[in-house]
Amino acid sequence: MLNHTIQVSRGSSEEIEAEIRVYEEICQVNPATYVLKLYAGLSGSHYVVIEPRFPGYHFNFLTCWLDSPPGNSSVGDACGWWASESECWYLKPNRTGDTATIVQPSGRTLTCYIPGNWIYPSPDVAEPYVAAPDELGELLAEIRILVANLEEDNNPRNEITDASEEDFRATLRAFNRETIAMSNRMIAITLVTCGVIGLVVYGAIRWLW
Image 1: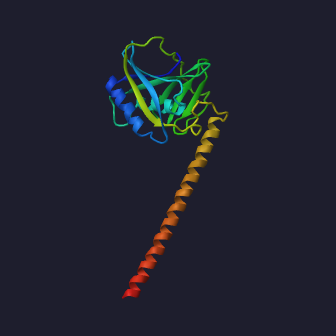
Image 2: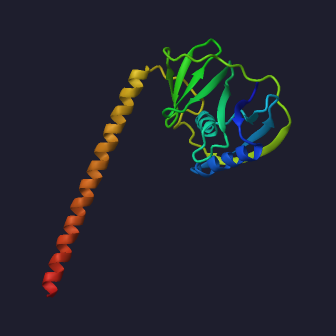
Image 3: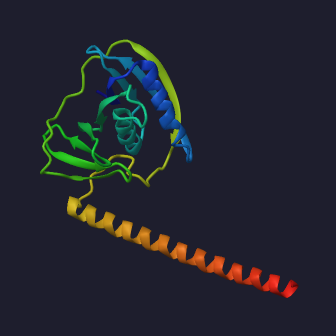
């Protein structure tokens, strides 16, 4: 299979296309146009076939989105196949948390942290490899979407980091601590600013009276 493919086991073609359009609406930073083709599957599922230049972060995020769209139970149960130059990865979203499990043809398992598209080895995760389908059914729709082109910021080629899961978790905890500290600083600055403005207004009222 030359193209990246997402299988959606639940939902009509119209409902799946509608969810792709919702995904498009939330990804409008520095957008670029990509072509997605929606096929009927021989087993009753639908398949979204995506051109090769589609960035890895969009493929992983869109697969997870179609697996369990917020507020829409009609569409769901998705998985995907990411086609690189050398092999085809199987991607299975995890509904507990912001991750997906990736399985290489060799059986090696990886975890993808979706918000940052951080991919790292997960030898303790057990997930079987599922091969991509050899045949698809009728072409139902050709969908052109305009979504964010983040270039190098979010691992567009789905490259694997050498870090372990423990390293990743430590980095994430440090990032969260820095984010909280920054928020606290902004709150403190806001309170001080409001206090100064209040004193100025109070002084002006006293002077006018």
